[in-house]
Image (cartoon, rainbow, N blue to C red; front, side, top):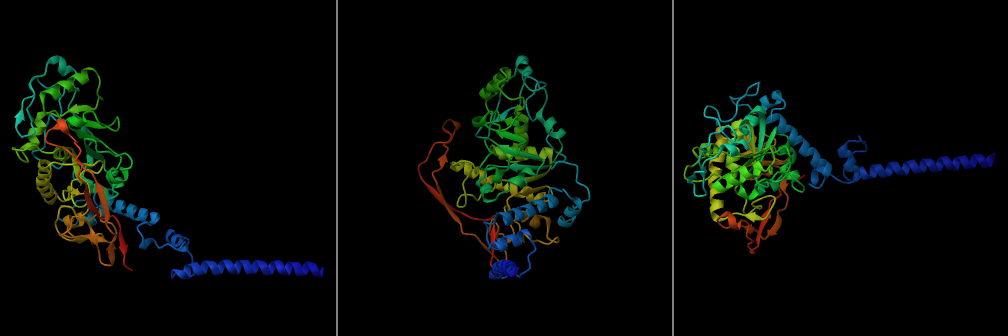
Length: 438
C-alpha cells in the first residue's frame, strides 16, 4: 500500500512539472516578441506565437491575403457600387446619387452602329483606316457572302447584357506591378486585346475573365474561351475576303465578328483624323458605348525604366508605336479628369491630379480619392510619381533588377516580332507592399 502511494505521488509530481514547463514555453515565446501572456487564438496571434510579425514582412501570406481582401472590398463598395450606402460616403461630390445612373459613358452622341458586319447590311461597306491614317475602301460584298455573315450586329448583344462595370485591360507591363487579378474579375465585363491572357502565371496580375476581345490581323481567331466575343479588325480587302471565306467554311467561332468601318470613323473623328488609333483606344471607346462605368488597367505609358512593354511577352515597340502610345495618354487622362465618377485608372496614382493616400478621408475629392482607391496599405499618391510612394511611418521594398532581350517589331506586319539582341535592364519597383517602420 505504501509503495502504491509513493508511485501515485511521483506520477502527480511529473504531471505538474510537465504542465508548468509547457506554460513557461508558451509565455516565453510571447515575451520574446513583447506580447502579453494572454492568447486569443486570432490569426495574428497565431503568427506571433510562431515568432512572425505579419505587419513587418511582405512575405506573410495570410496578412497579405487579408490586406488584398480589404482592398477588394473597399473597391467594390466605393467604385463598383456593390453597396450604394458605402459608396455615397466615398463619392462626396455633387454627382453622388442614391441610385446608379442608368446610362453609358458616351451620352448624346453615343455610337449607334453598325459595330460589326452582319447579313442585313447592304453590299457597299464603310471604309476602313490604313496604317498611315487614310481610309481605304473594302469593296462590295455579294448577297451570297452576306448570308454567311452573323445575323445581327454584335453591338446589340453587348447592349442587351447591360454592363454596369467594365474593366478595359491593356497589355501594358504595369499590370505586373500589382496583383489585381481579383479586382479585374470583379467587373461585369472584361475587355482584352490581341493575345492578352488570363492564364497562369499571369492570372493573379490580369485576372481570368474575358468578355470581349479585339484582335488585329496577327492574332486573328485568338480566344481563350468559347464565350468570348471576338472582334476582328478588317483593314484591307484581303482581310474581308479571308473572314468571309472562313465563315462560309465554318472555320471560325459563331462569336467571331468583323469590325465595321463605321466604328473606325466614329473613333477617329473623336481623336485625330490624321492618325490610326491603337487597338486599346478602339476598345476603350467601345466600352464607353456599352458600359456605365469603366476601370482602365495596363495603359500606363511610363513603363520603360520600370517594367516591360507587354506584361506577357518580351515584345517592345518601334519609335512610331511608342510615340503613338504616348500621344494617346493625353486623351486618356482627360477622359478620367472629365468623368471622375465614370472612368478611373486601375493602377493607383496613374494620371496625375493631386496627393492622396490609402487612408484618405471621405472628404477627399472623387478624383484624388479614386487615384489611391487601390493603393496598398501604407502608401499614398504624389504628383511626382506614377506609382504609390510610402506614407508616413512606412518604407518601400527594394527594387528588383530585371534584364531581358526584347523582341522588337519593324514597321509593317510582315516582320512582326523580329529579335533584337540588345539586352535591356531595368529596376522594377515593388509597389504592392510597404513595410512599417515601427
